[in-house]
Image (cartoon, rainbow, N blue to C red; front, side):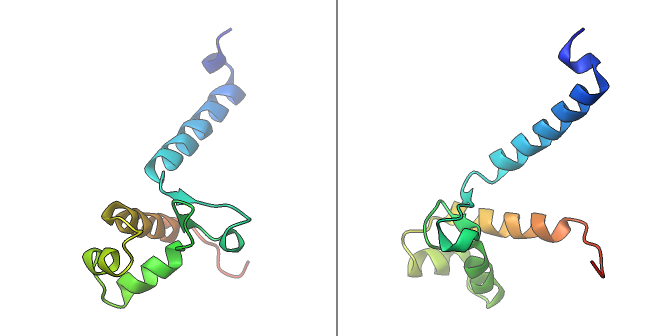
Length: 96
């Protein structure tokens, strides 16, 4: 019997594949309990995703942000925005 033939294993394989895609899609987003109290950060730097999203929400462009914070790269800002959109698209349950 192959790995994919077993229902549990194929389900697990599907979940692992999704997790792998998420990790690969957000390779610049790091979560480390020892850095910024476990908040998602950009490349392990002390720039949190929520900080970057707040800057974008306040009208700063990605170019403005990288000019003001040269440690960040354009792709960092774009990936923070994608990560925020991904989190916002997750299903939530009111009242829990």
